Length: 303
Image 1 (spheres, rainbow, N blue to C red):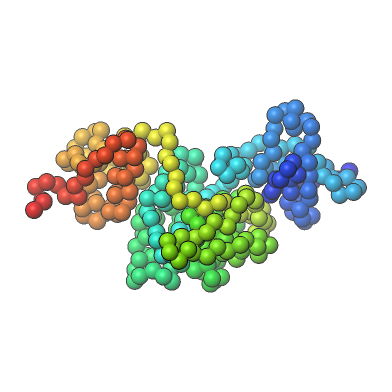
Image 2 (tube, rainbow, N blue to C red; image 1 turned 60 degrees about the vertical axis):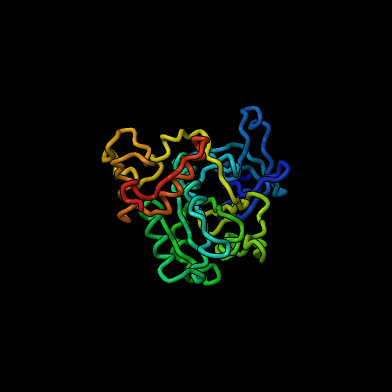
């Protein structure tokens, strides 16, 4: 009986594929002792396995987890990679902002990849990169059909488990295939009528793209709901707002229509992105459950 340590990369019907460095993938079952301990194996788990003479494996122990996501159900994720297309489908800041907030709540580092930069207008990619670097994300620009543009991103993934997310049609599967040809992800074409991608990822699986380096593709999404956040807390998830903490006239400023708001002044001066601010307004409205009428300029400046 041989004993190894590895990482669970896939689980279907009680069978788990465990990647062992130098050995490849070994199909295992979970031993009954794990059920007795109420330990349910998850994709991403570091495990100890025993392999008999026939090559059949059993998971005998699960290492303590450093993190655990519910959707997708995956353990030990080190970082999240969100892929956005600048065009086709059209980029929506609000969706990216929601994702950044959700990952911030889980203390999960985020990489942002702006794909299809060949479709961007002059200076558009640079402007978006500047906005999101200022809010704390590590940002990359790629053209998924040009492998050389993926090298900086590949380096950022090295030695980590990364969960890959983003709306359908932005190029996630193309990036996954470039990173790991064995993934053989089906690439969906955009619906010509609505310029959205057809969903092609149907299950959660880790793909080994290098030593101790795994990438997990997830089903695309078009919306994310922010639960359990009070409206007055929302500004805490905008790092560029927090740089101005304490500079508003009122200590409980919501950064909406209050006079003497340092955040709104920074938006008017261009110090804070207007797109990010308008995204904040929409999210505040959603979280407060009521309509709010906004004015982009102080009343004394309106004509």
